[in-house]
Every structure is written in structure tokens, then in C-alpha cells.
Image (cartoon, rainbow, N blue to C red):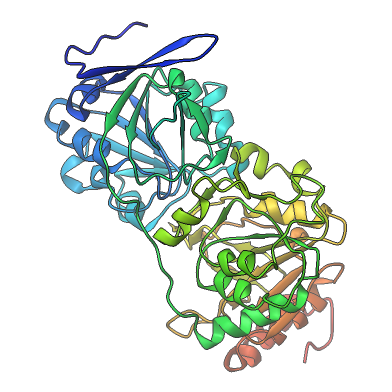
Amino acid sequence: MTIVIKAVLKKVSFCTKKSQTIMLITTAEEALKLVKSADKIFVHSVAAVPHHLINTLVKRADSLKNIEIYHLHTEGEAPYTKPEYAGVFHTNAFFIASNTRKAIAEGRGSYIPIFLSEIPKLFSQNIIKLNVALISVSTPDKSGFCSLGTSVDATLAAIDSADIVIAQINKYVPRTLGDSQVHTSRINYFVPFDEPLHEVSWGEPTLEHQQIGNHVASLVEDGATLQMGIGSIPNAVLAALEHHKDLGIHTEMFSDGIIPLVEKGVITGKYKKRNRGKIISTFLCGSRKLYDFVDDNPLVTMMRVDYVNDTSIIRQNPKVTAINSAIEIDITGQVCADSIGYNMYSGVGGQMDFIRGAALSEGGKPIIALNATTGKGLSKIVSHLKEGAGVVTTRANVHYVVTEFGIAYLFGKTLVERAKELIKVAHPDHQEELAKAAYERLKHQYSSII
């Protein structure tokens, strides 16, 4: 399919020994005239959202209808989810963030449950046929390569699959290395527009988070390979690891918390068997300091999510310690991490990819770390999951559960033994109630849980 934009502002040529590539540079208004009703559009992920392209697309709402937008977690505003655009844009989230949660709850969007590692298949196998991919990239280098910066994830598969790729060239996008390097020949149109990337800060960890961090840190062995999420608990864990030695990083995502450990020589990747000495990730999000840290940094390699989250890759590294969280966990070890009852809250993500990968790693430790209670004082360790709650990680996959009250070890335990372990790390205010409920649920298997 050949498409011509009438108002191309500029052509830039990149010459190499083998070929010449011409970049077509235009405005967002001109490029987005290519979008038509009923198109399926992919939007770049997390901090890499091309907000200028999105805002310009939304201005065309009066001339469009039935646009399907596909994305992973995204940061910043998502204007296409507003009620006034119902019937024009419908968001389809592989992972739900705060900016799309309301729209999905009210029917202006949908949630697609899927392992993070398998999202690229949806595009490469045309299970979802993309018409347009909207991405953000760094300024191209002299050889015509630009970088996807903070998010590779499923974006490469979207680039390879979409009919049209429109890239916002943004000087604030860091030039990360690895699979993030994309030649300009793989992109159809370029829109120069500079805007700072979305920044996230979690502030100082609470006392409870510090306690959780210390408990988790006690499970981390020197030479381990870490996977963690981003947020207050992962940051508290990282802060508690400053006296460890030769840790490696192979994680779907990371934030500012790793920087002090790199500076102190704690993170070296010395004992990794895959990508030794490298920090491996598929997306990142944090402060400007983090984006500057990864810019042109050969220590950090950004890879496709179907590599980073591949269980067969993960398990090859030693002592993989996977640290994930949950919305609630029942007394048998079933983990709900994507919904609050029937209400979809987040997503499956990469939790199972890494929980299983860690379990198969030599000396690996799959860990679920969570506060014992919600902000309203409700127990997150429950006798039964809420009606409608989804099981993201099965009871058979759970080894360690950590709260501020300690460590529960479930691997190889009976249902009764699991209940005892989990009640032990529940908030003391809820332990008696949980013990009674556990007895009623499991009384045919034991005479007393107390």
C-alpha cells in the first residue's frame, strides 16, 4: 500500500555504504490524516506515550468513528477515554492503568487478559491486525538509527505489523541500547515535537514498606538475579540491598531504585548466565534522573518483551528472585492481582512469567510481597477471594508471601499448613477471624489451626 502525504515539510537522507534512506518529516496534523474510521491503532507504552500525536488525533474526533486503540500500561492523560468520545475511540488495554480504569469500568474500553510475554504474538500473527502504530523515538543518529527509549515491550512487534508507523521525534527520549534501536527505514513518517517524558515518584517508603523491604532482602542471596516491579515496595526492597554483592537484573521493568545500587557496585551482573554484566529490561519509568541514567548507557540493554519475559530465558540465570505483588491472597495461596471482585483494576502483566521462571531457576525464589491490610484496614490475606476476583497466580505457583509481619513459605505445604503460614503474616487484628474461617473451610483436613 502506497500512501502520499501532500504536505511533506522536509526530506532528510541518511547514507550508508549499502543504501540510502529518506525520512519523510511532516506535522502531526498531516500525518494523522491517514487515520480512518474503524482503524486499529497501537500506542507506545508507559513513559514513551507520544502525547503530541495522541492529542492531535483526538482533535479529529468529529471526522472519525469506531477507532480501536490498543496499548499496554500508559502514563499521563489518555484523552481518548473521555465520555464525549464514546463511539469514536474505544480503548483496549493489555494492562489497566489509572488513566483508563474509569473508561473500562463504564464500557468505553475493554481489558484483554494476557501474559505480557505473549502480547507480541497478537500483532505478529495478525490476531489483532494493526493499521497504525503511534510511537515516540529519539533523534536519529548519523547512520539513521533512532531509539524507542524507555519502552520496547511489544512495540517492535507493532512496528513490524502495522500498515503505517508514525513516530514523534522527541529530544527528551533517551537513547537506550539493544532491541530499542530502530532504523528510520522501518518508520513511515516522522513528526518532530519535543516534550518531557512523564515522570513518576513514589516518595519516601512507609514504615510498613520498609519492613516488607527488609524481609524480602533477607531472602535475596548474593549473586542473585532480580526481577521487581516499580512502586513503593520494590523501591523499599532495593533500598534494603545496599550490603549485598554481585546482584544481577533481568526484569520487565525498573525505576530509580536501582541507580544507587549500581553506583555502590552492588549490581554487577557478574554471575548471570544470560546477558552477563548487563541490566536487562523491556520498559522503565521514573524520574528524569533515571532517563538520563539509561541514555546511551551500555550497562542497560532494552529487549523485546517476548525475550525478557520468556520463562526459558529467565530460568537460565542463577537464583532468580522474582518480587511481585497482589491485591489479595486467600489462605490457600491463590493470588488475585488484576481485579477487585468483578472490577478490573490492573492486569495479568508479567507476574506469572517471572514467578514460574524463578521457580525453575537454580536456587530461584518466587516472592509475592504485599501490605497485610488495605488503606482502609481490610485484610489482604482473606479466607476466600472476592466473588469475581481473578486468579493471576495459582496456589501451586506460590512459594513465598511477605508482609510487614514476616515471611510465609508455602512450597510443598498442605492447605492446612499454608493457612497457618499465611495467618502468621496477616495483621494481628485479623488473625483470629482468619483462623476461624480457615477452620470452617478446611475442618475436614485438620482438627485445629490455632
